[in-house]
Image 1 (cartoon, rainbow, N blue to C red):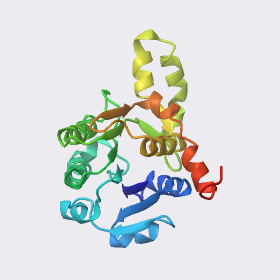
Image 2 (cartoon, rainbow, N blue to C red):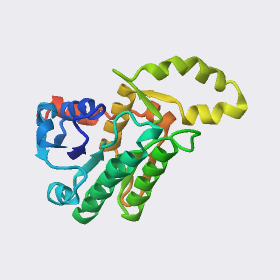
Image 3 (cartoon, helix red, strand yellow):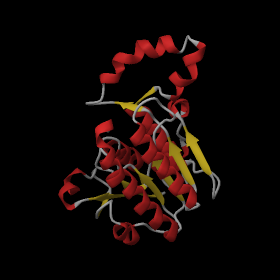
Length: 231
C-alpha cells in the first residue's frame, strides 16, 4: 500500500515506519528539513511543515493511506495552548488535504476518554476526531491512554493499581479504557489498521483492549517474502 506518515520521526513513527516497510508497503514521511536525518531508512522523505495546509495540499495523494502521528511530546496539563497550536492545527491541515485528494483511509491517534485528567488534551483530540468525521473520511481512530516504551516507563509502577481496579466492579470499565499499552502493541495495531481499512466512508474505533488484541495479517508479509507466482 502507499502510506503517508506524519510524525514519522517521532516516538511511535520511528518504530512504525520500519514495520510498514518490512511488510512491503511504500512509505513517505513528512519531516522538517532539520529532521530529515531521522527519517527511517527506506522511506521517502517529504520536506514540509505539519502545521501548514499548503504542505499537505502538495504532499497528500489520491488513494493512499494517511497515518497522522503529529502531537505535542510529553503532554501535560500545562501544555494546553500547544495542543491547540500543534495537535489540532496539524490534524485540521492534514484532514483538509486528505478530503480534497480523496485518500483511501485516514489513521488518527487520539486518546482514551472520558478520563479524570488531561482535559485540555482530550478536548483537542476529540476536536480532531470531529474534524475527520465532518470531512467524511474513511478513518480508523486509535485511543490509547499511555504508551509504554523507551523513556516512557514510569506508569508501569501503576500496574498493581490497575490490577486491583479490575477486581472492583465500579472501577473495572475505567481501568480497561484507561489501561496502558506497550509501544510494540501500538505499532502492531497501527500496521493492522493500515492493512485492514474499514468500509468506505465509515469510522472504526480501536480502544485500549482493541489495540492490545490487534492482529496483523500474514498476507502482506508473505507477499514481501515470496516472488510473484511463488506460493
